[in-house]
Amino acid sequence: VQRTGFSQLDSAFDKEVASQGAPLFGQGGQVIGAMAVAVPRVRATPQTLAGITPKLQAAARAATLSLGGRYPNFPLSDSPAVALSQAE
Image: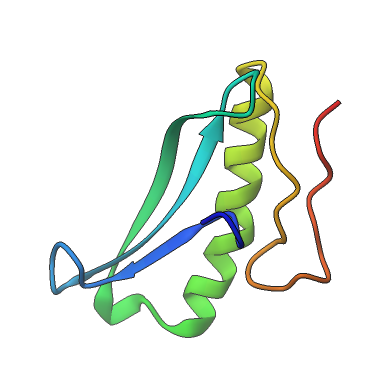
């Protein structure tokens, strides 16, 4: 999570479910929560998961900012070339 800004689990809690999660941050940059998406394993293709990741990160960033938090400069998905800008 510290490197990419999200976590991904495949059948960790339930063999039929894949999930991704992204942290929410407070004013001091501390983690105050998280949001997650769970997908039935049969639908969790690499393309599906790759499409969810940037949307989940954008939603986590928006929620963090709406709570008055500061979102770190994580890469989008697993690509260091594209980064979210740090909140002012």
